[in-house]
Amino acid sequence: MKEILINYMKKYSDLSEAELDKIASDVVIAPFNKGTVLLQQGEIPEQCFFILKGCIRKFAVNESGKESTVDFYTEEQSVTIFNKHGSDQSSKYSLECLEDCVLVVGDLSEEQVVYDTNPGLETMILKMVEGDMAEIHDHFAAFISSTPEERYQSILENRPELLQRVPQHQLASYLGITPESLSRIKKRLGSSQI
Image 1 (cartoon, helix red, strand yellow):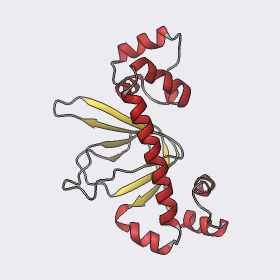
Image 2 (cartoon, one colour):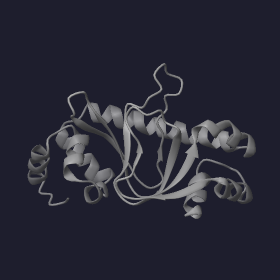
Image 3 (cartoon, helix red, strand yellow):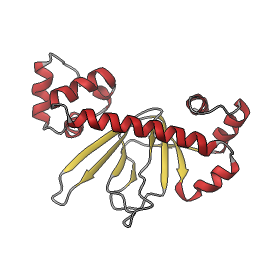
Image 4 (tube, helix red, strand yellow):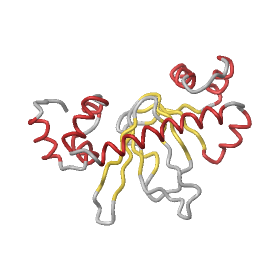
């Protein structure tokens, strides 16, 4: 698993193999069972995660109890709720393992200590976050300007693995439609997946 992390870090850093190996050796890698809630809506986030194996769902439940899936994260994606600078630091979202997962687990309160211990890591993390933010921005812009059918088509083209890994009702919630509407879209497109 450490090799996955090192190869990912190489994309964002010119650190030596020895420096990357030291960083990878210093991090906590932990397994989590399917169904584990990593963060409950309303809690203050204390950890960040990087997925080596598995799938995590980010979701929220409104006052009337309706659950809405916001995103799915899979291998080589980071999962962090950033809100430590806001007046209300509690999370608006929950994070749940949809599969058995192997995750790099970071302690947000130790962030500066980790940067001080591993020179070059802060710059690398900044590049990773910038890449994530650009991807999130592009995804959001495409999402709000598209129809549910176009959103589903985008998943077929860009993240087809989700169709096998995510329950249909959660995928429908993510697309902003009902499970019945998702079934109709799949029939129209002639897709028998999920």
